Length: 145
Image (tube, rainbow, N blue to C red; front, side, top):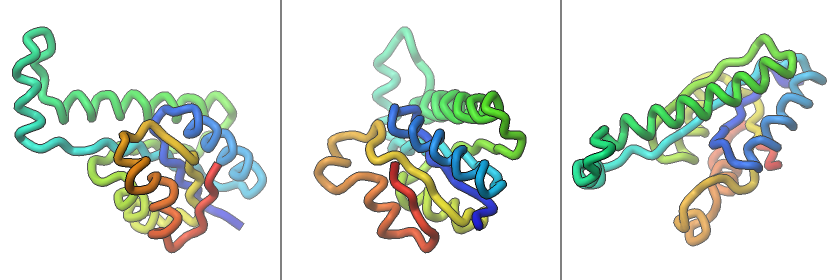
């Protein structure tokens, strides 16, 4: 039925539930798991604010990328420990919902399993959650957990 399942993962409790549900579906269908962590690219102005932090002078994008990599690696390790050998993890930068949908299309994922609420900002409450936007933009089925 499904050959490749995409799990957008931000480390939130609902993302953990989505990963567990995706593993359940993958077991039944013998599908491969793909984990995607998306972080938001910051403008030069936002990045320049990191210069006022003398104890942490790193570039904000580099810090966000490193954190996203840790989150993706955690999810991949969790899946491997649960017995999955066909699991890959990716980190991308960009607008979250559109990046998820574009990634699914580019990687031929035929199901997206996503948490109902993640670690988004107030923007998510005002404009609609990432999961809601993904369901509206995706050409493949989306299971919201």
